[in-house]
Image 1 (cartoon, rainbow, N blue to C red):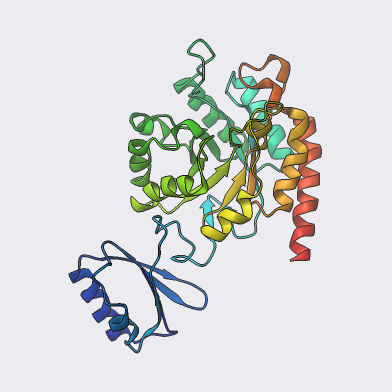
Image 2: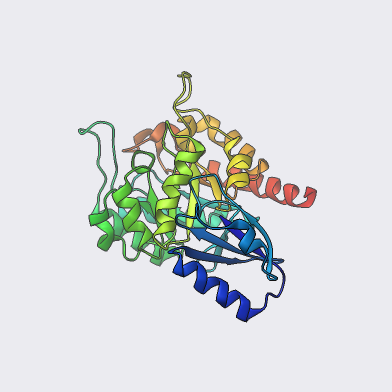
Length: 336
C-alpha cells in the first residue's frame, strides 16, 4: 500500500499517522519527491482501512499495490534513483559506460586496458577476478590476485572498479571494490542477495538467462529490503531458441523496467550477442532506447583472451564506439 501526502503536510498529524501505522506492525518507507511525499507501507496491510487513512487532512490518495516487489516499485518511488559512485552518477539521464576485460589476466593487461578505457571516456573499469564458468576445467580467474590487480589499475587511473562476487563469504575480499556485480547465474542466490542488502555498496544485478522482469525485480527486492538502496539492473540477454547469437538481447526491457521500477537500467551487449561485431550496434541501440549505461568487454588481444575473447572488442574499437554513443546520448537528450 502507498499513501500519497499533500504538499507541506502538518508534521504533528504526520507523526500521529506514523505512530499508528507502526502500532499495526507496518513498516513505513518514506520517499520525498520533487512535488510530493509518498509513504510506502510494508507488511500485512489487509486489515488497514483505506477510507480511514484517506480521510486525514494530510493525505491526498491511498493505493493498494498488487505487485509483490515493493521497494523496487516505481509506485513507491516515482523519481528515478540516481546512484553515486565517487563523483559519478548512474541513472537520472546520465550515460555511464563500464568497460574492461572479461577476466583479469596480468598487471600489464589490466592497467593498459584501464588507461585506454579512461582515455576514450569510460567511467568505470570492469574485470573478472572470480569467474563462474560453465566448465570446471575452464579458467576460473585470478581470484584474490585479480582483485589486487584491479585495485592497482584503480590507483593508476582513478577509475572505480566493478567485479563479480560469487558468494557471501567473499565479502571481506571486496572491501575496496566500488561496485559488486551479481552474475546471471547468481541472480536468485538469495543468501548472497540478503548479504548484499546489508552492505552499503552499489550492486549491479544481472538478469538471469531464463528470468522474467518480475523475477529480476524480486531479486532486487531482496537487496533493497536489507537496506541497500543502490541497485543497478542489468540486461545481458536471455536464452531463446535462436542459436546464431550467444543470447537474445531484450531491448524492450529498458522502457518496461523503467515503467515498473525506479532503478537504473544498463545493458550488456557483449554477453547478449557473444560476437564482437554485433556489440557496437546493440550498444548504440540501447542508448537510443534510453538505457542509463552499458557494460562492455574490452580486451587488448581478444584472440588470445583467457575468457570470452570472441565477444570482446579492442581498445581502438571501444574508442570509436564511445564517440558514437556520446553523440547518440546527446541527440536523445536534445530530442527529449
